[in-house]
Image 1: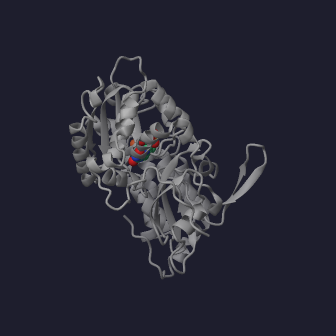
Image 2: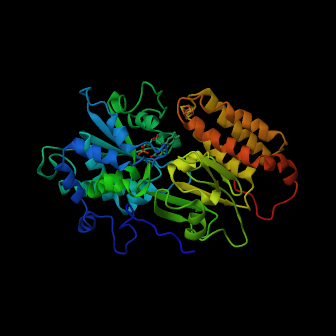
Image 3: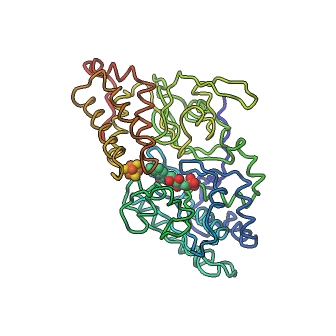
Length: 450
Ligand SMILES: Cc1cc2nc3c(=O)[nH]c(=O)nc-3n(C[C@H](O)[C@H](O)[C@H](O)COP(=O)(O)O)c2cc1C
Ligand code: SF4
């Protein structure tokens, strides 16, 4: 079967030979024309177009972008800030970094249109500390855009002006969580804030209304202005509009970046036809479809879903369309678009030990269930791998995970417990058998623990 065609909107130019990340090249390819169009539009119309487009956030939660903009408190008289989430901290996700390196002006144009629409005069790009090259590229691109009057005071001869600042984080997963990010931007420890009352749209940066959007989300805004919200909404599938970037890593022949209309490609097509299938002599065992915190899917399991007309349908893992709603109905999520593939060489206890070590390291420590629970999950899985494993450890792990989710300040509680809950639910037998399996040396070798 031929691989389904990519629909490249965000990556339209990125891999074209000769396409460079400087302003002249961007302008030659039609760059900043949509900013010119947008500043001649009433800001409320831009927000309406984004609402009509159905664009959902590409950072993790898939919240509708236009609805988020509509929630901003515009009556407080305080400044409104735009914060661009370029922390890209979810393991398995590497798309925002690529946009920043290859096409920074696409992001800057998206930021300026979004800022104009929301009357933002100061926008911040919060970029993770491990991306120094990306931060330098952004600083250079902003300087170029400012010199050309696309950024700064009185852009394009209008009375509107907006500055963009690049803020480098120090490299912590929790700085990707929007309220932790805001605390960090204010120069404090990135302790996530309690919602309510600290919904960024009302009480965000410096206690002012703040929009936090992901890099990829903001890049889509320019294309919505170009084609109009209604036309954009026809791309993808209902309620799952537009294209999205999928980052495929792990045990496939062709890992990499791919851009598809949301819901127009199934997991099976993506992994087998686009990514070339499993490695020689191997079979797919499991896949995490939306970054390491998304619940794992096991090849061979099926899902019975309700259709709108009341009938039902059964899907295999391979048949799941890569859209927000179907993935959620199958008990997982599209999340950040990071698709992590594991073949039959992977021992699930060792894979979970690796994931748990990450989450225990990254908990900010404010909430007892998360601080203690993530550490205990790490301790148990590390003990299982490096010391003695017991057949009842799976049940013990599950009981710890079950006491975290839903009892914490931020969604990190879910992010750290979902891997354990789903690994145990789907690979419980492997956890039970691990003490015996450990006695037999493996041909493939285990995953290295961080
Ligand atoms: C623990 C945690 C880590 C997160 N990391 C990121 C991240 O690295 N990048 C990102 O865009 N969103 C991340 N998010 C989601 C953000 O909190 C926020 O929802 C997102 O930036 C909003 O942008 P969007 O609506 O455009 O997706 C994270 C959320 C949690 C709970
Ligand atoms: S859930 Fe975890 S990361 Fe989030 S605030 Fe609580 S301790 Fe910090």
